Length: 85
Image 1 (cartoon, rainbow, N blue to C red):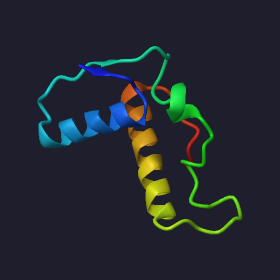
Image 2 (cartoon, one colour):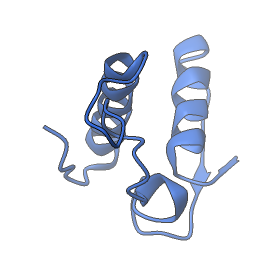
Image 3 (cartoon, rainbow, N blue to C red):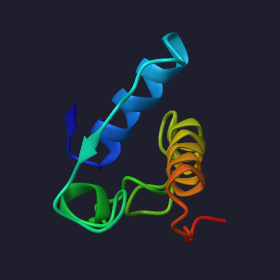
Image 4 (cartoon, rainbow, N blue to C red):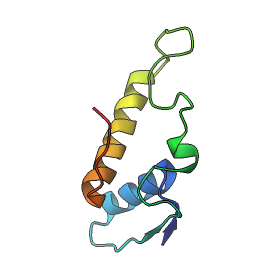
């Protein structure tokens, strides 16, 4: 059982499934879909590789690509469309 369907909860689920594909995971979240509420849905600069001055952050693109992958995987598994390009 994982409580929370944000980045941390979904990341944990992906990690567990990558190590043990047969494990059964249940995710409980107050929202209606993955990453749609709480800190994971806040526009806090977590989903782009730039600082406020427009310069690329160290490891910014790698983090952005990882976030897009996680969101797309969650979207594919849940059947809820994502807005990530």
